[in-house]
Image (tube, rainbow, N blue to C red; front, side, top):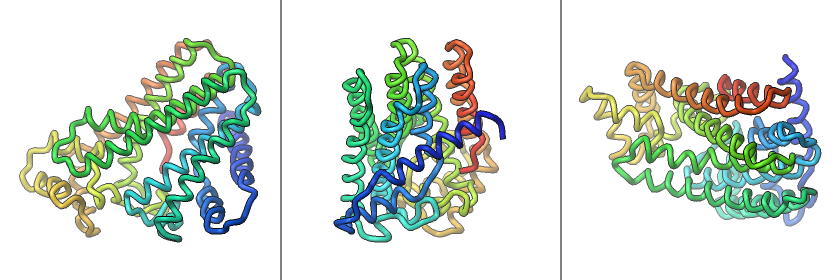
Length: 328
């Protein structure tokens, strides 16, 4: 374990502790029990960590950004709860989703509650730039909602281009990473130039992250991934892999399988999922996705290279590499 991984684990432990102790009330039980359950799943805490690392890269003290880090993690979990309802997902991080364990109404309420609690945590931040911070946070929520809306619209659209897809994932995934990183820079006292650099860094990292998630959905080990493999295919989602395959594959039998995902608004049988996986592998679509993930990650690091050399900059570079080499 190198010093950057040790630093990551140390700060993540601080975030975990603060997230896990943030909710102190227990009643009403049907409100607070699902909230605590949602936050107990852990995860890599990607958004709070990029916030803390960006704060330090801007010259700030991470302790001044912990409340904001908790806020973005609560916000992220709010989006996951509502996303799981829309996707009819039964598992998240190897445990039942909230709407599965309770019901849709309780899950909707839990998501709403996390959104409000996220603002409660954010507004504890002691910064002269709290108005800017709150604006970035709020705009981030709007971007996520727009991205989710595009994602749902695309399910019923026959033709979705790679450009359409990139717009959607920029909003749905990348912009929450951008908001987190920019908030960190604001708390750390960074200037406009640094904000622009970190915006581009985190945006490209977010694009790589989502394409990687698309790839994991069909290629990852189910136990490691934490949810059923092929969920995007079952829901008829227009992922990078499906769109790229439809743009490049000419074989009639392979195209028929892929087009049936759209025509049937998803495929449900395990053997159908495996058939799609095989098509992606043999036609080079998996390699194409891996290439794009690496390209966007390298592009993110190119923006970092414009910053003066420092341990904090190298920590962000390590963070990029960690995400590139993750297994779930």
